[in-house]
Image (cartoon, rainbow, N blue to C red; front, side, top):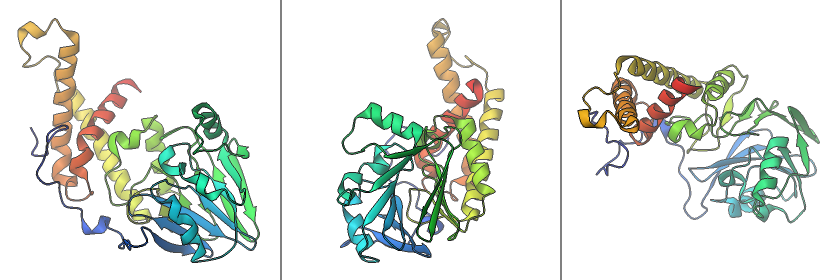
Length: 310
């Protein structure tokens, strides 16, 4: 077994977070930090979640409202301008990113989302996630005053309807739950619904012309170097899982009386593949990505399953 504790085993101490993964401190009295990304564009974060807002001549466009700090978004905006919120953009339908939007509706903003996001919100019937008033299929150019956000959609990777949000003047790209600057992706490749598409999106992001990446999570914004690091980890993960699948023999070492139980045979096989995968990755990556030890078992499991069935 690797030295890294497997899922379900309580540990006394997780691996320390590398300095490169940490962001500027959050003032506990405020509960958030605001960072200027360019002309009229700002990121807001509580150190775990991230959203954006863009100020233009007549108002403000908000992108996402995580419930963990959505109540502070009006104060964050008020530090910059007294203009009203005229638009809200949904990155995707997940509640942990847009479930705080009800507190921003005083001025009846236009809500913009990809069509699949709206379909899923209609199914959810969640009052905390009101339906969008403007939807699009593949692309939408949100031009307000002198400011522009270019919204575009590929295939579902992390989730259906999850869009690329690009501010060309500020050279800032926001794509949520795909790249985690300095950190291991959330478990099972951020719960990606389509792992091959998830890989394709990270490769595409690496080719975009941006200076700042807003990933929706962790304590700081990202750079091209962060994308390259995550892509390198993902390629190593794929190679390690593929090698482990090839090297591991189903049923090896299993009690003879259990071999008539195909679920037991397969469970034993999957576990040994994951162990081999973790052992291959730990020497190189355990000190490079924050929370490597927290989610590496999940990543190896998700990758081996994708290689077998996708």
